[in-house]
Amino acid sequence: MSGHTHFVCAECGQKNRIAEGKPAAAAKCGACKAPLFDGHPHDLDEARLQRIAAGDDLPVLVDVWAPWCGPCRMMAPAFEQAAKTLAGEVRLVKVNGDNAPGLMQAYGIQGIPTMLLLKDGKLVNRVSGAMAAGQIVQWTRQSLAA
Image 1: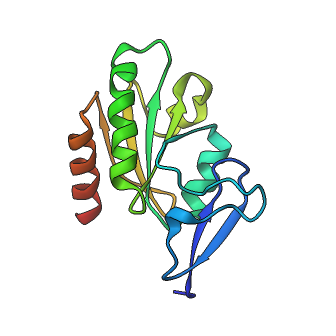
Image 2 (image 1 turned 30 degrees about the vertical axis):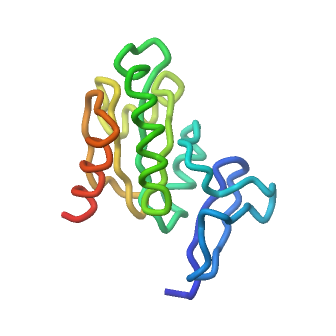
Image 3 (image 1 turned 45 degrees about the vertical axis):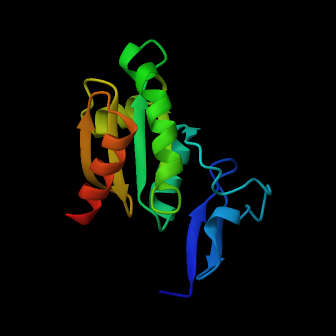
């Protein structure tokens, strides 16, 4: 590797690099000064998701949800907790499927919540249905280890 790790800011979309060995958890965006990792999943639109999925050196776990979906709302605290557990290993983000028809079509999503695990912009694994935080963490780690 080049001695740097690359991350796209979820707030402004700017690509940042962090020298290897420096803690990513403390890093801030060079453009907008927002923390690159704050332990919370960010709500993204399709364009920002594509930029992060293609530009981050970390895998990206996407929760495709909708505000009217009961199981989605039930899973939200678990996804939040999983984001804290997986911080530094995987970036967790949320995309409202109602506002992302291209994403829904591209991945053939017909039911929500659906989680997509992306690495280097490519789908590694997917799962539908609400999960507890421990299940999300375990599924993510197992999917990446396979």
